[in-house]
Structures are given as C-alpha cells and as structure tokens.
Length: 292
Image 1 (cartoon, rainbow, N blue to C red):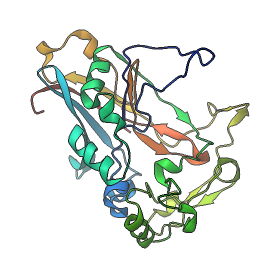
Image 2: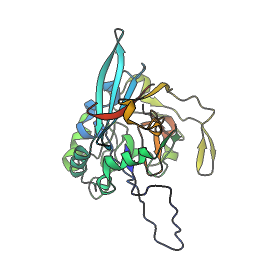
Image 3: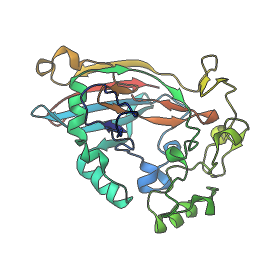
Image 4: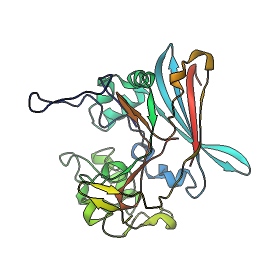
C-alpha cells in the first residue's frame, strides 16, 4: 500500500493554535486481491505459505517521473523459480477501484504514484514493524470493515463460506478485505484468547491463532522476546539502469518503505492481532527482491 503525502518533509502542527489536517493519504492505494476479486484470491490459495517466497518489487519511471509500482511473487517448483502472481499500483486502476468501493481518492488528490516517486528521491529507510490496532482490531486489513451506513458487518460476522463475501458485495463492494471473522475488540479476541478461523479453506496449520503474550505497557506492546512466524533474508537492490540513477536511489526498500513524505507497506496479520510488514521493466526504474 502506497501512502503519498502533500508535504516534502516532516511537519509540526500545534492544535492549540490551528486546526490540523493530515497531509498524507491515510487509506493509501491498497492492492488487495481478495477484496477486489473474491475469496479465491486469498494469499494461502495463491502461495504455499509453508515454503519460502521471493517478492520482487519494481519501481518504474518514465522521464524521471515514477508511473508504476509492481510486485512479483515467486516460489521454487522442481528446482526452478515460478511466478505465482503479481500486483501493480498504478493511478488509473486505483482510481477505478476507489470508485467501485465508493471511497474518496485521496491517493490522487495528494499526487498519486508520481508523488511517491518524489518521496523516494528524498531517500527512504528500511524498517520492520509489528504492531496492533486496538481501535478497529485490524478488521480493515483482513476482515469486514465498512461504514455502517453502507454495510453492517455485524449482520454476518462469521466468514464461513464464499457466500458471505458475495452477499456483502451486492450491497457494498469491498466490505470484506479477507477471510477473518469479525471481532470488534482486540482485548476480547486476539489479545486475550485463542481464535479459530471459520473459513473452511484456511489451511489447518494456520486456522488457530494463539495470543503472543507480549509484554504490555500503557499504549504499547513489547514483542521483542516472541519468536515471530516469518523471517526476511537475502535482500537485494539493483538499478535496472545503473548509469541513470544517483547513489541515493540505492536505498533499502524490500521490507517496508518509510518516507518523509510517504510510505509503502505490505501487511499481514499475526497472532495477537499484530501486523507484520513484509515487502519484499518498461523503461527506467529499479527493483528490489527479498525472500521470506
């Protein structure tokens, strides 16, 4: 998910003296194959999640302006790397999806893919984060979440068949973002008890999620002592056209891109409701790849 900002650096807003507005696209240009195309595009049906996966990310520009972000997902089969699927962030498809889901296109309002390219020019930092969202229990990531005036997720909170998705789609496309049952509150679900997912096609080894038992302080979790369920290695970054890029383009971007003026995330839910970030030519650009 790309989150461009209208600003070009860190800014401070004093709520005591002015009305503050968010200069960034909070929702972002999300590419969620399940949400857009249906349950048959669940990640566990596109990949063997018990085997390593290589994610190759390409940032493509034309005439010095970034126009597209592509991700290719590969796994080894019979000794050869095989492309399993790909995803693209492009201004026009994102605009069409926002219209379909009846969402404001803030991504375009703040500058779209080109604005993300501007942020990348200023440099980015490689980071890995695991965090929770107690306010909405991560339902916007892989469960049902929608403005209740458009669709009430509580009417059928259990995702136990594909019919649940398509029934909601007829009222509000995009309400279901993944096959996780709706739990309104983190502290009464993933944080405090073992959860078993209802969708029958979820692999048995991942149907049941137990709490992390992270150390808790006011407003935060400390999960540093918990062994998480994935690892990232073999990060490589290379220019597709080495002579055309200054040195500061060679920044580490395969896991998550955090920017003064934008951010790019790929997200997966972990037990305890925590989110893990895991990321990682037409003309000019550069690519990064990582194995997980």
